[in-house]
Length: 214
Image (cartoon, one colour):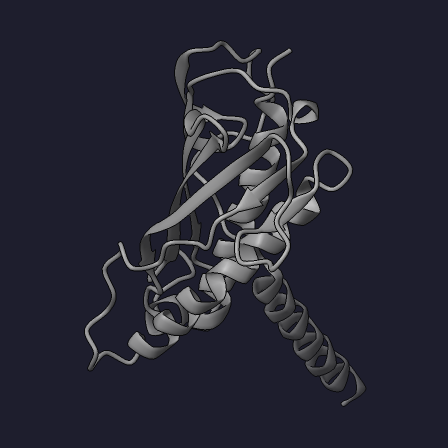
């Protein structure tokens, strides 16, 4: 009897730990995160430092700018689920949160390198500034049912974003990038989309630091 209860307790503990690990799992990218070769301007690269696609247009130094201004994330250029679909409202809500999630990760990731200011802020920085433009090009919540009943590889949800770093004074493009994050582990739509959006923001901040001209 004691052995049975011990096995039962272990089973419950194992399942709880498994569920927790699933819920904490992040979104994957198809690109390698291993350090890539030195930046060459101008050039294009796929899978550079974990970023799906990068175009190095013109070299820049963050120290030469007073601030990075982040424009509101463009969210009206991607296809939404049908209105009658049960994922429509949650997808719309996720798009509404994209701006805040991306900005928070950019600000955190570039802390100590350059001040980060939202374009919507009442006080804008003066002097020579950088401008970051971001848009959601794809958003797909996937299928929670497929993730639960089929396998964690099925029903994957994803978010794809495109970004561009611009010299605000000249409006010349310095860096262009494209990233997609995919999650097949989380069970709920809200977590899938929020996690992928957040991690893309982290990716963009990392890229902006790594792509500086030497």
